[in-house]
Image (cartoon, rainbow, N blue to C red):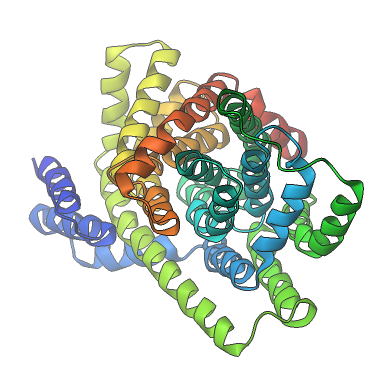
Length: 425
């Protein structure tokens, strides 16, 4: 009975608009108070929840993304992507996707991609005569690549909660991220031919070389991060620190676009974002402990396996649950709540925790493009100065290739697992 009331209280608070950390904490405190458990359990689990070395990577990856945006490096990335793929039909649509792939190796967050590159991309596409709806839709969809290609903040949080190798998770995201990019570029090609969108310009080797030279140092950022992790030179946490150091080097010494005032602003933004994430992780640690202590995951697995023994159907049900929750809940909060419940079920039907992590994150990224929460849509609504409802309609067609990639990755595990198995197992 207390468990049922805890869940009712959690969702009531979320519907009422309470912060996720508050909703998790208050509902967990209610259960502990009514079940006669010692209150010391709360502090103990909150401290243990955030006392994790891999979580140190979170503020550093956040800061690296902010520094890249503030230092104007996103403009160089966009210009290079334009010179590389702008010659294709619907050139700026392809540039949009290509720039997101490059920026994904620096920030690891969809909202950072949408906010940083989105302003540049939508402005350029409007000036070139592209429809606003198409510009907003492809910008929103391409931003979801960020948390799949390493480094990825959601994968770091998932790895901590699932007690899974973050290095393997990062390796597992590389090929799926490329597949997502190809699927979105195929969608851009279809749109471009239907609507007669132009090529941006003919390919010019001279322009390509010039823009490559200008963007070369920023392009080393994903090589440093991903290459360092996959080669064993860095742990993910050390790679995050290296990314910040390299971003500061570019902004302060090479391009001289950073000053003390901007660094202080970036630091305050990083502190604010990190604090909100850590509050969610700490509060969810209590919630997850209650679920584990009361064997909720086992009970859920029994109920689900009682409905069907078919692994395909169980996986589809799990995906449906995650997609539904992702429509209403912020990504980090959804990971912390869903992982302790769904991962044991997935493992019972033979899904590797690393593979499940990629599926879970991609599910939740699609949730960022759907109302009523849709954080990416809210960001682009402000960036593009269009109503939220219009952003929803504009993005809807691009859910088709993303859901197609989700199904492909779910039922062809080798696409996610080949690289981590080759490198780590």
